[in-house]
Amino acid sequence: MSESGNKRKAKDKAYYIKSAKQARKSSNELGPGQKGFLCTSNREKESVREAYNILNEYADIIYGSEKPKEEAGLSEVKKEEIEDELSKEMEELKKKQAAPVSERRFQCVMTNIKGCIFIRSTVENPSAVVDAIINDIEKKKQQTTKFLLRMLPIQLTCKSVKEDILKAAETLIDQMANYKTFSLLIKIRNHNIKRDDLIEPIAEMVSKKFPEIKVDLDNPEISMVVEVLRATCCLGVVTNYSGRAKYNLVEIAQKAK
Image (cartoon, rainbow, N blue to C red; front, side, top):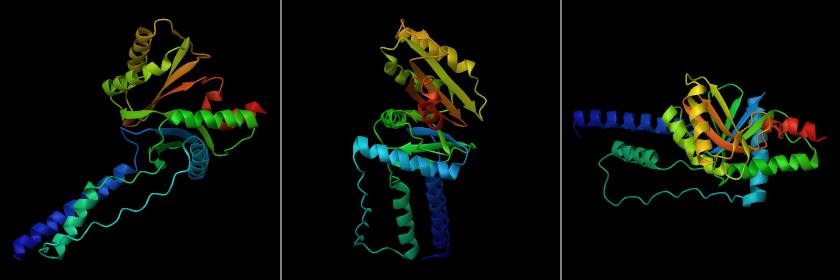
């Protein structure tokens, strides 16, 4: 192979290595198109451990035990000869870059905000898991976490752009049917979008869809969660937010005693 060819392949290899690293990094960060659980904590490392334990316990009850996935086998070796070892390495990098990231039932991803944890999940309905956890805490009157505080179910995430947030919020409004009162739980962290830019249009969409429902800021039957975390917005729907100690698992346990 010519010297220029070697240089070109070396350059291509560096490109694919960089792209693979960026793909792995993005898969470990909070971003659009995810669902899961938004948690607050006073000690993140211990809180993540507690979150994994409690989420796996109740997901097993609701959805059944998750069988470990078998590692994907290596692809068959191509019969055609590869020009040289460098070309072979480049082909492997291409495959790794194109391969989908293996999803675990629960995976902590970075929010880059202190005290704020996001557990990405593949479960069908995050709200069902949180409801089961809270109902059990209230029934048994036992504190199940020490460092993990609030746990909010998140049905979807989008970019922290007003148009995207409003579009995402609209898809959740049907879940507010058959309730008499509602509220909007909008919180913005490390972003310049204004709460007023979201409150009025979302409230109008809810009222237009369900004219009989009324705003109640003190004790709403149902609430829409809109949490902006830097470049990503997390959205979900929760019930009896005030009565459930604002979904603070520690306070729920203390209140139940």
